[in-house]
Image (cartoon, rainbow over all chains, first blue to last red; front, top):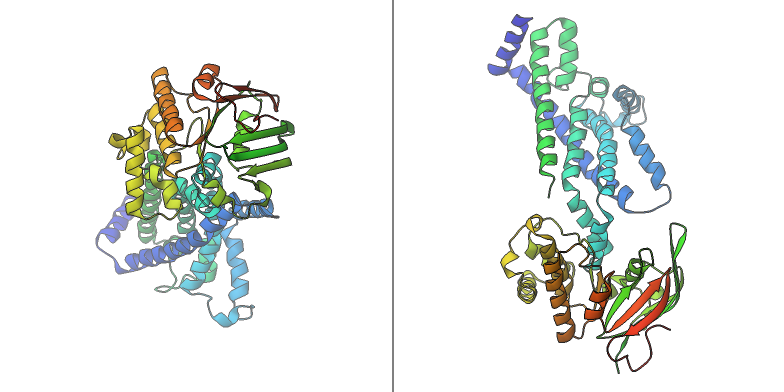
Length: 228
Length: 233
C-alpha cells in the first residue's frame, strides 16, 4: 500500500507522459462540456426563473429530475444513438472525445439550469422592481437579477463541473476508454484498478481529489464573500 | 390651473384573496405633496404600487397624464417619468456613484453626461463625499439618501415614497424631511408620501389622504386646496 502511494506520487512528480495526457484530456472534455452547459443552462435557468409560460413548472421538474440522471443510462442511450446502426451513426462520433463532451454536456446542463433557476428565484423581488422603477426595461431588470445572483450562478456551474469531472459511466460507454484517444482519469482508474496497477490508479485518484478540493475551496471562497 | 397627473376611477385590487383596494376614486395634481396615511393593511403601499405603474387595477381605471394604464403601449417610457423610494431600498452591489447613475444608464445616457448628473444630484443631497463608497458601508440614513438621489437622477415629475423614514433615527429622519421639503419647494415635483407618522404628514404634505380598509375615507387640506376639485371624489 505504502509502496503504491510512493509510486503514484513518483508518477505525478516525474512528469509521466501517459498520466499528463490523461489529465489533459479529462480537463479538455469536462471543461468544454461545462462551458457549453453553462451557455445553455444559465439562460434556460433564467427563463425558468424569471418568466411565466405554460409548462414552466413541468420544465423545472424535468430539470430537477435530470439532475439525478444515471450516467450509465445516458451512456447507453447515447451509444444506441451514435452506434453505426443508430439514427446518428452517420456522424461517426462513437468512441471520440466529441461523444464524451456530448454526454457530459447532457449530464451537466440540467444541473446548471436547475441550480441557476433556484439561484435566480432566491434573489429578492425588490431587485427587479427597483430596476423597473429606475426606468429599466423588463430585459434590463432581468439582467440586474442575474447580476445579483452571479455568485450562486458561478457555484451552479462549478457544481456541474464537479459532477462531470467525477463521472465514469457515460464516458466509458461512449468513449470506449481508448488509450491516447478517449482515456480520461475516471475511466483509467477503473481499468488500472482492474489490472492491479494501483500506482497509476492512485496517481489519477489524487489528481481527481485535488480537483474536487479546489472546486470546493473556490465555492467556499465565493459563497463566503457573499458577493455583497 | 394645476395639471391633473393621476386620475383613479373606482379602482379595485385584490391580493391573496383579499380586496386590498375597494373602489378608489382619486385625483392628484402636479406640484402638490400628498401624504397617504392609514393603519397597517389599509392598502397604502398597494395604492402606491398602482401609482408607480407596477401593478394593474383589477377593476376600474387608472389614468396617468390622461392615458389609461391598461392602454399604455410603452409602460417603460411612462415609468421613466416617476421616481420611487421604498422603506428599505435595494442598493445594487458597487459604489454609490454607480447606484445614482443606474437609471440614467438604463436610459442610454452617455457616461460623461451621466457623471455630470450624478455629481449634481450628489451635491443637492450632500452625498458628494460618499460617491466612491461601497454601498454596504453606508448607514441607514445614507442608504435612504442614495435611494432618493437615484430616483431624482432621472428627473421625475412624480416622486413616490413608501414610508422612507420608517427605519431611520430621529436625526436622519429630520434630514430626510428637510431634503424632501426643499425639493417640494424648489421644483414642481408632485410627491406622494406613504407614512404612518401623522406629524410627518402634517409637516410635509399639502393634503392628507386617509385610507382605511382599502377605501379612501378622508382628504384633509393643510394648505390651500387645489382650485379645480378635491382629490378625493
